[in-house]
Image 1 (cartoon, rainbow, N blue to C red):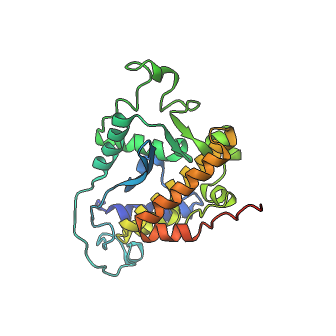
Image 2: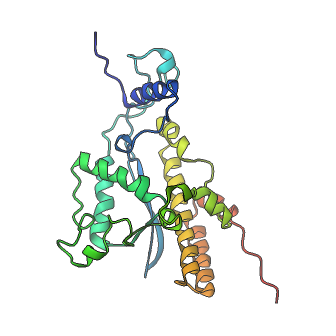
Image 3: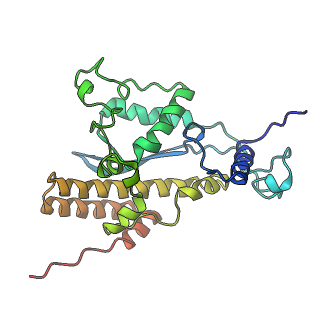
Length: 272
C-alpha cells in the first residue's frame, strides 16, 4: 500500500473527521498542539505592558494537498492563494518565553495554565530542545524554589487562578469568558479557541495575536479582582489599577483594544 505524505492541515482534518465519526472529541492532545502565539501582560514597577511572542512564518498549511480527495482539503479541493513558505518559528518563540522567565523570574498568573497552556509549552519545548533552567528549578540551584517553584500545583510562583478558585476541584472549574463577563469585563471578543485553527489556516496570525492579548488582559483584571477579594489590594488601589489599565490600553491605539474598551463600560459613579 503506498504511503501518503500529508501536510499538517490535512493530517488534522483526517484525524478530526475520524474522531467525530466515532463520537470522540476533535480536540488535539496537548503534545500535538502547535504554538503560534504566546501573549503576556507584564506588570512591574515600570507599569503595565502587553507583549506577544509570535510565530509569523507562513507555510503551506492553507494550500491544497494533492494527496487527499477534494472534500478533505482545507479549501474543499479549490486552490487557495499561495502564501510564502517559511520555516516554523515555534522553537524561537517558546525559547524567548522561557528566556524571559530566566531573566525576570516573574510570578506567572494564568487561567487554566496548569491544565493546558503550560503542559503544551512543556511538550513543545522538549521537542525543540528549549533550555529553561530557572523554570524547572525545584530548589537544586535556588533554595527558595524548593518551597515555591513554577511546577508545584499549590505554589504561587505559578498561580493558576481558575484552579485555585475552584479549590483544585475540576468539577468546579469556570470558563475565563464566563467569569470575565460576570465580573463586568468584556470577555472574549470576535474569536474563541475553537476558531484559532481556521484563522491559522487562513493566515490570520494578527487576529490570533489580538485574541490572545485580550485573553491575557481578562486574566490580569480577574487577578486584580482576586487581589481585592483576598485583601491584597484595597478598594481604592483596585480602582486605581483598573483606571491605569484603561489608560494604557487607550494609548496602544490598536483596533482590538478599542473594541475591548468599548465593551468595558465605566463603572457608575457612586451616589454622594
